[in-house]
Image (cartoon, rainbow, N blue to C red; front, side, top):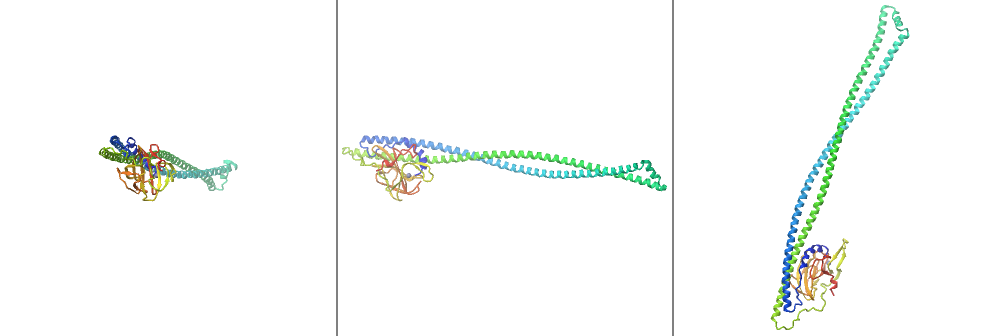
Length: 457
Ligand SMILES: [Zn+2]
């Protein structure tokens, strides 16, 4: 038997606390005793009825809680669905925003390429201007040199002489013309160069203005990119927030699911309790019948022969070993062999081959209160004995089969079942418990279980 039982049966068997097994099957001897006993049994049945009502109320309350829990789960689930939708919307927005940012980056790159191209053009134009400036300077120098040569050779007069020294008028004309042509050519070249320079400068101004426009445009696009990144960051922050809310809701849902599981378990426990109480009621009725038969038998032999006919086991050992085999586990705290957790063992384990008979352990005659399958105990039998005025409940678990039924009277040593490994068991053995007065589960804080070794021979 493992610890699961302690939890599942603890609450179920709290109910037994207000119900006492007091019918004295063995030692009732006088009519008065038996009449008193019948009264007590009737009272017990009343108490059991009350207890059953309480359990039913408890069960209804728990079922309401389950209903509430399910409503809450549905509400949290719809919140999760809504968050899920918001999250996928936000992710789509982030991805769209990233698309815009990528487009912006592309545009910035294109504009930067254009700016580079224009910068190159400006550099070329500057060079062209330099070249033209040089040519202008050269031409001016040439012209200046020509004028200086004329002056050096006598200035205007000398120049005139050159002209007057002409051999003929036609020679004079041609000489004059030649000088004029030279001067005109110089002037024309200078003018043309100046024009070229002006044009190139104008072009440079245009290109520079163009470059400024594109730089301004790039600035706008960069500003837009900053804005887009800001928006994207906000969306990412929103996504994180939604993720957090989602995680919280999922934790909450998991908690609710766990609570739901516990509540369902509790309902099963309460159903166990209801069944156990009904069995107790049956056992009490049966005991009352037996007492009434005893009373009838007593009044028939009113002659009053020997009244001390019963209690055959008085003075002998109160309990016998319920099966032959080896003790494989003791009563009390033990370390779980696999999980190394400490847990409480409410009885002793007796290892024996499948099918070995199991005997009623308590002295005298007892009444079977429970004989059924339980998820933890497997096939188990519980027997109530009253020995020297003390009530004991013995429990025999993991049987392969049960040989008695509830309400049946059993004597010490009578076969009640056979060794098996049903319920929460890993191999054929008998799990045997002794409880004082009544069974209150095997939770170490509330149990009435005692160490069977102190009662066995
Ligand atoms: Zn055990």
